[in-house]
Amino acid sequence: MSVIAIDAFKPSSPGFLSRILLLDAATGLVMGLLLCLGTVPLAHALGLPSDLLMYAGLSLFGFAAVLGFAGMQAKPPAPLVWLIVLANLAWAVASVAVMFNWYSPNAVGQSFVGVQALAVLVFAGLEGYGLGKQ
Image: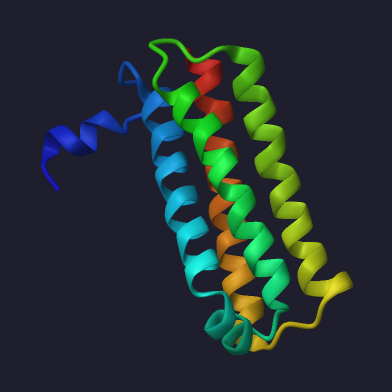
């Protein structure tokens, strides 16, 4: 990765929040595709119901669209970004509930859900931070 590309993701760089929102949108789209196209094999590998994976994947497409819209703005609207941060936090909480309260995924499933929940928390933190810098 070039220095220019790395500098684009420095919190002090102009457009940091927009780039983080677009990166969140791209990862959400990829995860949505993975969950929807790989529902059955993932369900077996993770020890989670295929319906859960399919609906989670489908929900990510709408969320990715909202993220993309916000990220395309020169100055993303603060209320929308706060809703995105809250939605990411809710997703992470629901992920923990999936692991410990609602379902019993196997070790691979727990790792998968845990890592994606952590990634979502990182995005929420970066988006909140970027909003404060905007």
